[in-house]
Image (cartoon, rainbow, N blue to C red; front, side):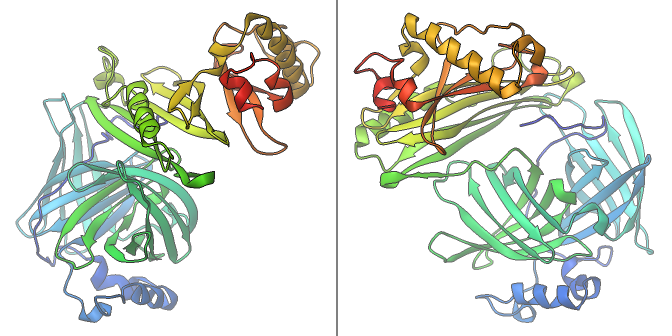
Length: 491
């Protein structure tokens, strides 16, 4: 997960709320205002989206959750406060500037007084938001942050600022459903329409979402379906700019409801469908290891292999390689309380496939203070017949490393249109190949190839990023000893 800029007063925390059921004159729920806030087209499409197996909107039971949105300026930045209420229980999402949302849980006291808190792991004091909604629809209060020891005055007016949420975007999110169920989601907004897919961290199939979003408020209503087309749930909530959302999931019968919190994330981990019915499916683990210190691990799992023993062997190997449960080395969270948020991510990408083999690039990203994060990548080839994970770099004979170095240097000079690599910012004019280089199987146009991958700082400065050079399959085959995995992959 990329580290996002975050103001000191914005503490990123996801919390769950207790269930309740109530409506209050102190709030203006989305449902009551949906037709008034939207234009004719908005109202028509929203009404259509709310007509489903449970009947039209007017015939459905009153929802147990209400939403209210307030916007304005705080310390010169655009700010949004979304209030979700279930009876006297509150869940608030506050966003200022381009930061991530602060999510707090609390209670309504009196007719319109709000108090909510968020407590980070390892922090004794809680971030607190206090305020009240007056008869004119204004929220006035303050946000206290114990980490920065600041107290920010907040005055906002009821109503969403449509300019803060683009009417067309496509992005990915990560978050929680209920108390701690991790979900990943990607959706696309096209004016009034909102469509997408999401998946539970340990699920092996995507669920689809489709419905509408109200332009004036960012309120959305969605129907959830499984791969067989059956309705499995319904979503209601509010977009908080393009980078966050909060809402409520209910089952198809409307008898169970859970809160949803989403924040912008890296790309949605796709399920890769390969020839022969084989699928590579992402499995995720998320953990908070300290104050503002999180770890996300995404590992591959294989489904549909002819050999169940090979499938089980790969499952065990990638659990081992990904660190098993989401763990961090001792001391990696040191300083996150003062200098966070710290983020650590391990993930992968499918780079190619040939009969009996799948190429994977394993990547790591970390941010633990400083000017920028650090990232690196290495490649493996999966032998799906034997259930083995092979590093092609370790199979490369010493004599082949010299030959490969000449090919890589020629490729990089051609890519950068230079005669000497130092002219393009590389550390050396001639790059040597290490004893265990990162070698990837890549497929696509014009055909399969061997890709040599260098992580930042390996052959050039951090700003150069990951450096790649390709060698065609026919040439790559000559680099490996007969009978080796490399020779079989590029045969």
